[in-house]
Image 1 (cartoon, one colour):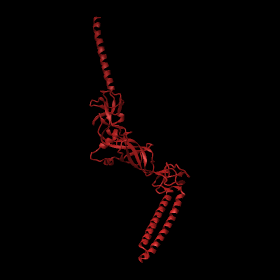
Image 2: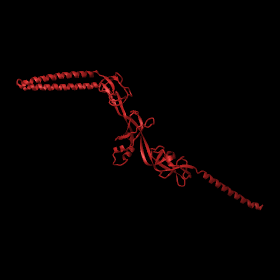
Image 3: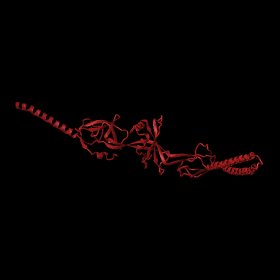
Image 4: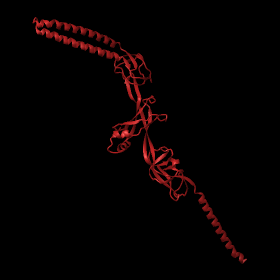
Length: 387
């Protein structure tokens, strides 16, 4: 019995040690199971194009109001709203018979003036030989010559009156001054119109080229003005800007690219922005004056650190990524990115550098110091679509 009592504690101690060993092995095994695979990529500077979008309004190259220059009634309308017209095409006929009468009166006035001038010439021819023979005084000849000059001036005045009457008569037929598209027609047949009428007869929109207007705030304008060499003029900077794209209201990109031509020198005190104009060709007339669109300006960055948006997460207005060190440990790093993006990527301005490795699968729940098994993927598979 004494032998059994002595052996029993040793057996119990051995069992306890064995159980502890099994627990340690199980803990080590669980720790090994918690090391998961994550896709990672090594960052290298690369070229990227950033697009900046601006809401814009569109106007035709020329918006010409067609107004009557004479008083009368609308006799005929030769076009309809929305019609495409060419320069010189007849648009309206105004019934104003008084101008036809003015032409006839002016023509009659010319005939009267011509007759008076002929009579004055005859008088000069009659008096001249009598003066030469000293039959009458020289005064009579001078008087006849002055009368002739007066009648010649009256004839010139009558001819000018005829030209003016014909011009006024020509105003009764109105033609298009440019190629374009007809706007609304507020006056119908029989409407009385005058030179002081408030509304135009119509507006012709020349949209062979269109002007697209958008705004740059003071910060953007200063950044543009300071860009490049201080010796470069503002006009030269404009000429170096890349071609811009136009995003139509249906989300499609317009076939033709445009060029930024002018920047308004005055900043609007109400909005704090300056108007910028880009010119676009519109050969098919697809874009109409008064439309809205979005101007897209590309900005080429030759050396940028790009991070996939899916590899980041946001916390308390800050953006984070997971980096991996040489011991395969995770670290949360706050990064600063540009406001505009390059497709599905952020351009990082602070927090990361070339050679850093980041986790591509961001769930926002990895902790600092967590050990992972990195599965490094090629940069080509991640950035293949970047231009």
